[in-house]
Length: 121
Image (cartoon, rainbow, N blue to C red):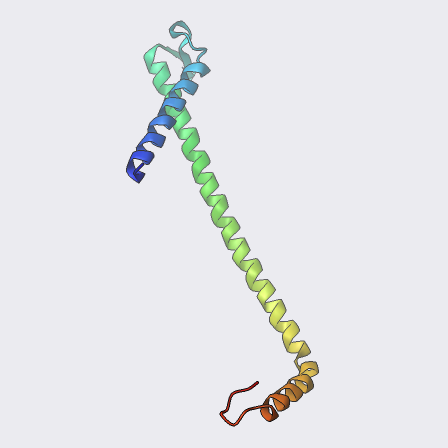
């Protein structure tokens, strides 16, 4: 299935689900379709429109809140990774005087073990 067809199918399915939710929120019967707007009762098809619009607004707010939370978590994770990298660099810098004799011995062993062609064994 092509991407555009899949996207259109998902969008249409979402609209159908929102319509069913809006109608069931008004108890499913056309006689009971009523919504309170500013203390005034609205009945019939305009009530279904208001309920559907409210569901769309609620879903869009939830989506934007999830996007904002995702951005915040991404920023915090980058900060934590940089903090751990700084701690690792500090630990390596503190241990470098202890590792220097080992590195010198390792370097000398590699220097003496070298072939005439210049490759190390």
